[in-house]
Length: 130
Image 1 (cartoon, rainbow, N blue to C red):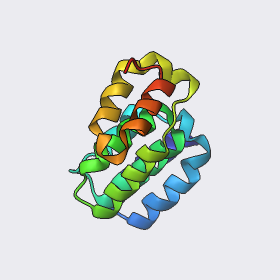
Image 2: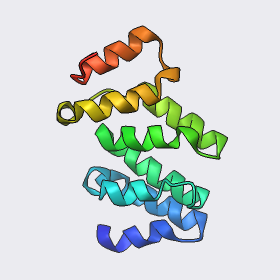
Image 3: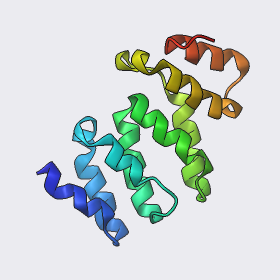
Image 4: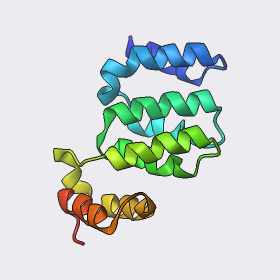
């Protein structure tokens, strides 16, 4: 059923896209992260970006961090704010340690959201050499 719902995330009707995202939330970790990340690009309609980010944020891990940091420069102020809050809430999961260099780079790109202490702490938690 999941594969049948994915195309609906690209739909023109915001309500359909929103309800599709809600239906997919329980299986967010099983959805294709790269496919969802493509839908967070500024060339996509706002409702598509929001739905894709909602699913990636629920997924967490490196995919959620990638999406959140990418959206820090989104044209929509509300989405930028939500992305910033997501980055600030982010903590590494067990599988993130294998992505240390990328995590360090993503956290550096969002350094304006953290004090120096908190930034060093997040990097330490993720196994990034500070």
